[in-house]
Amino acid sequence: MTQVQVVADPASVLASDLEERIAELQTAGTSPRVALTGGTIANETYARLGANARVDWSRVDLWWGDERFVPAGHADRNDQQAREAFLDRLGVPANRVHATPAHGCDQSLAEAADQYASTLPESFDLVLLGLGPDGHVASLFPGFAQLDERDRRAVEVFGSPKPPAERISLTFPVLNAADAVWFVAAGEGKAEAVAKALAPEGTVHATPARGVSGRVETRWYLDPAAAGDL
Image (tube, rainbow, N blue to C red; front, side, top):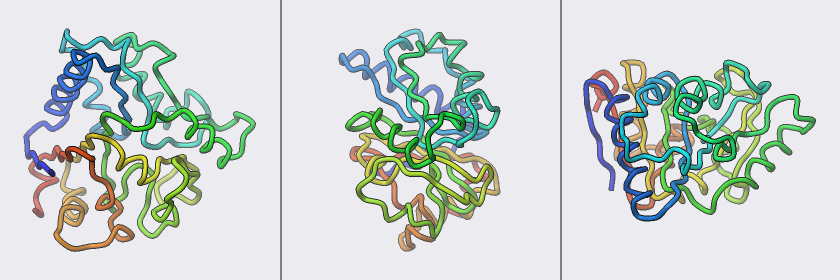
């Protein structure tokens, strides 16, 4: 089932819902397995985390849907941005943070992708995804061969149309094995991509976001501008 929520401040609503879902899973005896996303709206979301006292951040395992293949600690890395936004502030233990290998790790990009795949859980409780103006999700871009990958769980990406050019991305089989997939998008620049992703007709090669849905639920958190073409 796909739910679309149009709210003035999607980052705030998403942060609240994320903590509530984590708290529910922990109350049920689960150590939540969450794949995070990067980007401006995601970092705004992470900056709002910490309000729910029921969440034990020492019992949450975190991965990323994609990562930029740049050196560890680089400002472009999603894990570094998350560290600055909430990981350090909320005391998430290092052994719960499953980052991708970084550039300079003496591995090729393909080897780094395979190593990252070896750390992944069988499935995620929740995957968070942003959306590019071109409809890409994670680092799965329109027309790229990675959209057709069915065997590997994480892949190398060269020539990203959005710099930096080299990245690691989870693939559709992993993303679609998650119980829940929550998209978040804000701004007029995302409106066309949102509309294409949710349209009755279209192709994954034109709009990769069409290829991802949760096994149990799929949610979209949008501000009025991003929902403007719906």
